[in-house]
Structure formats: C-alpha cells, structure tokens
Image (tube, rainbow, N blue to C red; front, side, top):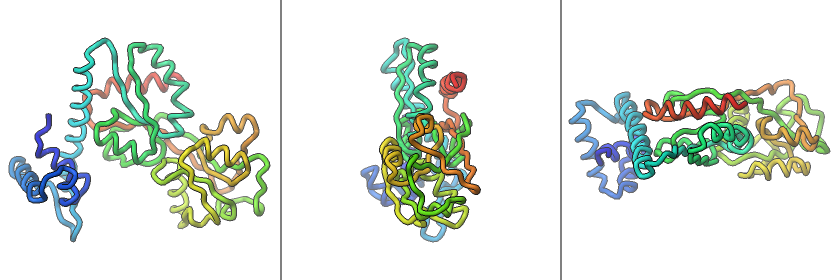
Length: 293
C-alpha cells in the first residue's frame, strides 16, 4: 500500500492546485504542503516548480507520478486477484465507442475460446474518460482511437482506419461539394466533446485554421447509433470511422462523401501505464485480438 503522502503527491500532480488537492483529500492545504515537503526532503529532489501562478511538475516529479500511477493500479489489480484466487483470470479494460461496439466484439470471441476461464469486463467510454480511468487504476488498459499523450503510456498500434465524411443516400447537398469547406453549409451531426471521433475532426480543422463552429449548424449527439440514424434519415452529415458504418454502406443507406482534400486515417491503439507488472498478460490479450482479424 502506498504511503499516504504519496497519495497526496499523486492528487496534487493531477490537479496542480493545492486548494483542489486538499478538498479532494479532505485535509488542509498546509497538510498538503507538509506532505510534499516531506517527500522532497526524503528523496532530496524538487517535485514542483512555479511558473508564474501556475504549478508544474519537475522532470523528477513527472517520473515519480508516472511510477506511482502504475504502482497504484497494479496494487489494485493484485488485491482483486487475491480476493478471487481461483483459476479465473480477470481483465477489466476500456475501449472507445467505435472500437468497443464495432471492432472488438467479433474478436473477443477468439480470446475467450482460447481462455475460457477469463472474466472479461469491457467499459465503453470516450477517450478522455478512459485516460482518467486508466490513470486512477480503474481499468488495466484501454484501446482508443485518436490522440493521447504518447510519452505518458506504453502503447502499440493495432490498426489504421479510414475516417470519412458521410451522408444519407437521399441527402441533397446545398451546393456542389468538392472540398471540406464546401460542407460548411450542411448541418453537422457530431459526437460530444472528449470523444476520439470528434477530436479527429477538430484537429483536422485546426490544422486548416478552421473550427467546428464554421459549420452553419451543429447537432451534438452522445450516441453513435442515434447519429447514424439521423444521417440515414437525411437530417445532416457526419464524420465517422468507416469501420463503424460498414453495414450501412453495404445496405446503401449511407454514402461516403468524396472530398479532394480529405484523405484521413487514424490509429486504433492499445495503451496502458508504463512498467506495469501485468504487461505480458495484456500483450497476450492483444495478440489474440490481432490474430482474429
């Protein structure tokens, strides 16, 4: 079990605010400061710097935070295994919506066939939520689409998927469409903030000095099936991974909008905390997933 002062450091490393850290830990702000001073004295290093009014981790602080996140997560996994010491492997992981609903279900079957004594839990959330759950040891690993801080996690690319503009088969465009900007007159149906699917579009637009607000109208929907239904009903256009609409494209209820300046592919990636003692177990799962493509 981690020393309570290390938990204080972990909380402060996430909030970068003494007052917020004290509130989360239900202790006083001076107590937070005392814990950090104790650690800095014990380790003979400086954990935080002040850049103006902003508190930032030093390189030593970043390293310690990374190690402690992994130790905390591994400890939770060890305790869970001790409480369920049977011939059952328990794996709890997360996946983003496209991956969790449209990619993994077909592949998990193969893993469970090889490992029938596995208790598998998959949580489907957006990328931002999964990263937070991973950092807090609530899941062992995640399979995400889009972007995450590479330096913070062990990671392995699993596949590369095309990201496309889509419309219903009978949808009538406001004008001839050749480029991304030609779509700005169309209603855009988009996922919520924090989702990997939305972040890809936001980054593509940002690279061109554009934003989602450049579309004439945006409709924000947190459920991908609802987005697909609205597009099929010709309510507007959307941007999704092609893997999420394979069935609709085959049936002809949705169509890819061809754009001269939009050839986007993004990685689906396995990520976990650095230096986890369970890495081989996770790699075994990923290996089975890849072989079942």
